[in-house]
Amino acid sequence: NAGVMQNPRHLVRRRGQEARLRCSPMKGHSHVYWYRQLPEEGLKFMVYLQKENIIDESGMPKERFSAEFPKEGPSILRIQQVVRGDSAAYFCASSPGGEKQYFGPGTRLTVT
Amino acid sequence: GDSVTQMEGPVTLSEEAFLTINCTYTATGYPSLFWYVQYPGEGLQLLLKATKADDKGSNKGFEATYRKETTSFHLEKGSVQVSDSAVYFCALTESMDSNYQLIWGAGTKLIIKP
Image (cartoon, rainbow over all chains, first blue to last red; front, side):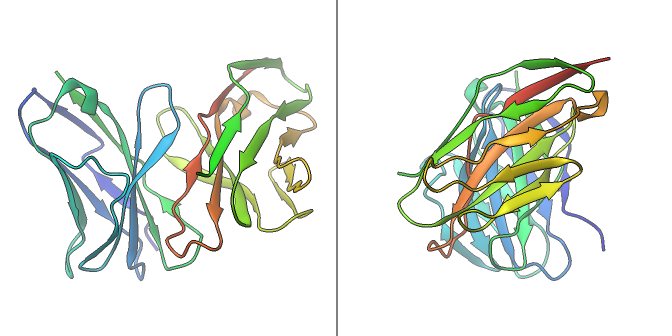
């Protein structure tokens, strides 16, 4: 059973461009969480999704950020018009339900 | 709101030394407590967990006991190795919260010297 997959592993974007981060959960998992880790800090919850539904987006900035988890395909975290402060590691975790979460290797976004 | 506080790093030890990384929490309900480890350039791996008071989580020689009276979940290992060098995160999730989002400490970087 493959683990949680995230791609790309590294992403460089210029200010004002769009960043699109993908997360493929483990087989059979229908719950996805996105967390952001700013440099030298712990992780912060961004959004929790189940298939086709956003359950809790209380940790996500109101502007420029959006997330989806379609019926088919990976979960996508989209950041429009990136700024330098968006530079961070973005981690996805999947779950079959309940408290156990399995993390992907993360996407390191650098905004130049 | 709920929060997790960890001792600041980096913590630098010699091989075979005893390790303690302090973690305290505040929570309104009855949280489950976790330690995750992040090796250089990698993602997060669950190291151990405890779901109720007085539970002891253990894995790979690491231990942590859920202490409700002191709201603590300190990580310990009797004899560290160079391969234990990593960043360690304490985290909690509220069992009453059906969303199970994790709330994280800032992380403690551990450096083990041969």
